[in-house]
Every structure is written in C-alpha cells, then in structure tokens.
Image (cartoon, rainbow, N blue to C red; front, side):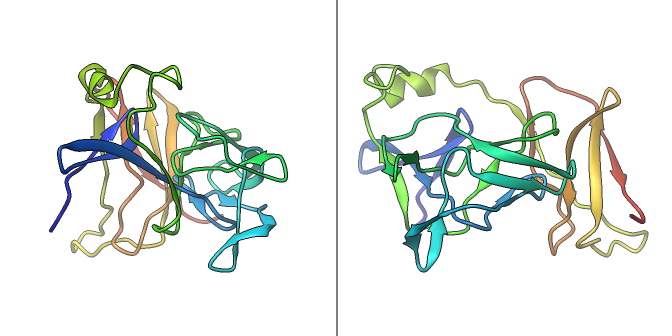
Length: 197
C-alpha cells in the first residue's frame, strides 16, 4: 500500500487512518545538501547504524559555492539534544555563500522526529489541518540534462540562473537530474552546464 505524501512548508507529511502527521528524518555525518554540500561533523557518541548523527551548527563543505558553512535549523524541531547540541533534521539548511541556502536530505529513513497535533504549542497553528489550509503551492521543477542523442548527462556540474543570479547548483544524479527548484512565483530560469574546473 502506498501512503500519499505531500509537502507542507517544504516538509513531508502523511495522511493515513484519519490522522495527519509529519516526519523529519535525522541527518548524519556525510549527508548531502541540494548543492552537493557534505556534513563534516557528527556526535561520535550518538550514532545511527554506526554513523554519527549531526547537529545544528555542525560544519559543512558546500560544493556548490566552494565554501565552508554550517547547518541551520528550519521549521519544527522537538527538543532533542546530544551533549547539549540540537539534532539536525532533513529540511534544515546550509548557511554558506549560496543563495538561496541549500537544503539537506537524510540518507536514512528509519530514525526521525514525528509530529501530530503539537503545532499550537510550537507556535505554528492550532493543528496541522489549519496549516494545510494556509499552504501555498510553490512552483517546483526538476530538470533532466541530456546530450543531443537523448542520453542522460550523469555526474555533470551545472547551475541554474534566474535574473542572472544563481538559484541552484550542483552535480546531476545518475539519471541526469538536477535538484528540485521551488519558488513562490513563476520564474524564467536558465540551466548552464559547467565544463572544466
């Protein structure tokens, strides 16, 4: 059975058995951002399948802008600390030179924080249902880069520009896909393949 997953303020939530809940997976050492950034720090004393769990403020190397950065908290977090450091979750961002900030994705799908109707206590809304009513549907696109024969260009560096500003950059996946690019309004974009370097 497939459970429908939707996104609320950029975070996945599920509706099943008459209820609604949100899950955000824990980030670990080595997890990546949408710009190819890599988490460099984790709590050695707190691991998931032998890999250290990372935390808010952990160091990151961003491949997209070639700079050091750190993990910043975005959206709801349960108070969960490791030696005084708040656990980082999927959907948190990298503060680096990139604009907009890249978003982190978890490399595992079994350790998570879960929410049901604690929204009011967290200052978001009385319930997740009320948040759903307020949700705006952003424009959301992903591009597949191919050569002239239609073959996917995998592991190719690219950047996406809008009004001459870089809005995303990274390396295509094994199927030639870029990261997903979400905006609140319709925008014209250009995709550039970066050769050399």
